[in-house]
Image (cartoon, rainbow, N blue to C red; front, side, top):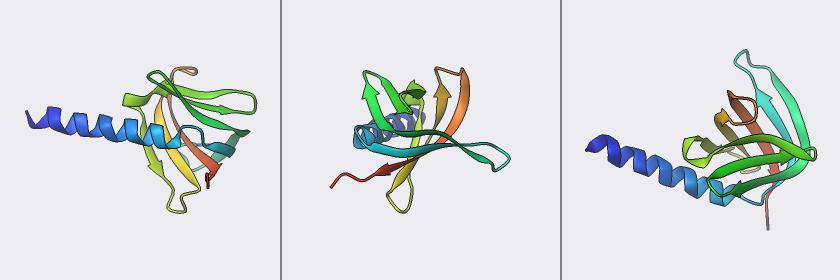
Length: 105
């Protein structure tokens, strides 16, 4: 009983964050690896939602695609970006991305 309540709150939060991030213009996207290395994987683009999927579109192609309900989102303290962690449907592995974006006025 208690576990189901917690899951639905997580899913609601994930959907809320995906909706908030939708349409943000990306300056650049970095992938963070377990050893602390960060590599830029794209420049210019947008964060998008399409149906049940969350998409990071950068450098004129999809860099990351995952199911919203299975993706963790958290904004950077500066509010100039977000950490996006989830199973990438394109690569078939868990990825940790940091998208730096321009805040909409």
